[in-house]
Length: 99
Ligand code: HEC
Image (cartoon, rainbow, N blue to C red; front, side):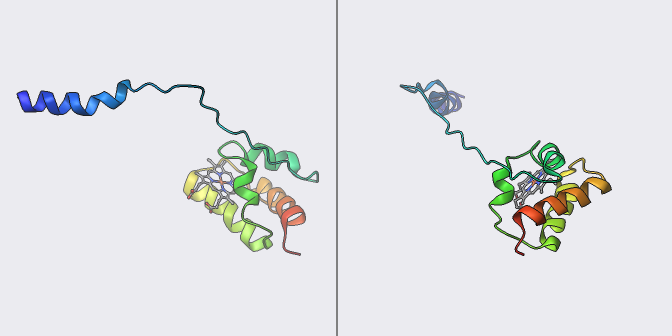
């Protein structure tokens, strides 16, 4: 029992650690290109992560963008309707496509 207490105390010390100074988390903006479907893409895709997650993939094909959107819907239950899929695929391909 005593060992258990010592053990728990030892591991609880970091919980009371103090940090000197301010912590600043950098804010990085990822401006979206203007175009048809910009607002639905913003609304549908930026609710869980920033636009940076999307454009970091580089310029990609229509098939690639469609697969990513399907992954978001199937794996992460993103609330995106069939009509939105088309609009978002077209927006991403027109503005961030390999063509
Ligand atoms: C319900 C939340 C949610 C929504 C809405 C969402 N995503 Fe994601 N997305 C995620 C998560 C969680 C990850 C991180 C997956 C990982 O790290 O493996 C991610 C990662 C990504 C990636 C990185 C590559 C990859 O395959 O993981 C891309 C590209 C992407 N999302 C595109 C989109 C697009 C485009 C939309 C809009 C149609 C969208 N996401 C909407 C949850 C979401």
